[in-house]
Amino acid sequence: MPAIDHEGWKRVLPDLFDSEFYARWAPRFRLISRYFRTTLLHAERIPQRGGALLVGNHATWGIDSFALIPEIFAATGRPVRGLAEKLLFATGLSRGLFAAFGAVPGVPETAVQLLRAGELCLCYPGGDRDSFKPWWQRHRLLWERRSGYLRVALRAGIPILPVLGVGIDDALPVVGRDRIFGRRLLGGPRYDLPLLLPGPLPLPSRFVFEIGEPITLSMEDSPSDAAIDQHHARIWKTCQQQLDALAQRYPTPWRDRMARYAAELHGEP
Image 1 (cartoon, one colour):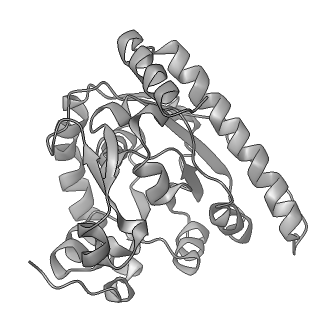
Image 2 (tube, one colour; image 1 turned 30 degrees about the vertical axis):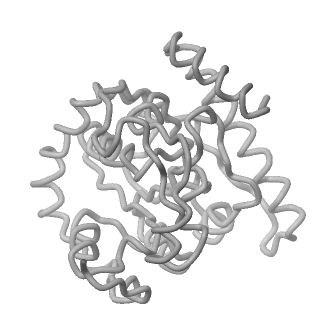
């Protein structure tokens, strides 16, 4: 097993992104998009130039990104720089692979640098908590007080673009968490690994992504924490409403019923 280097993310240089390599290989990743019969709605809302921060819900092991990013490139011709979990760069192999496809460690300084340079960036405010949530919470945004994306957008002076997806949590349904292996390997309960219903191979669920209306921010130069929290709550609510509406337009009746039953069994509304 490759050695885990928790500081490996510091060796990723975002300026060395090879756009020609990306353009050659991104279309091939549309095989993943086709496997999930991916639909991207309202791609025209993505600006043709200039920085913008895409924010949305996240699926198990980030499988949604492998379908979404090639579709955005196909629709707009713009590469997407993923603001990724630092641990994804903890081995030489993973570091080279993710960096080659435009991913960078999700730290504020790097994100602001790329956005100010006119890049299109993608982040998931809920992070690992949203990605590893139980399957019966599949249409719920678990963002809590994670407002770092908002602070980055304000510093960079760029709009936020919601990108919400349905079907993405049905490919690898999470039914529990392992409390031993991940903690020992990676160092803490945050990394409790998901227990998956079908095993490691994803089910052929249909993915539908929708780009929402751009959210333009207007705040004072040094907003208070209370102001940040207020705007975060508004954006969170807007995105949750968009996700709810998308789920209603693209229902999966028997899965929806099963999710409701599972939530009731766990005492959740």
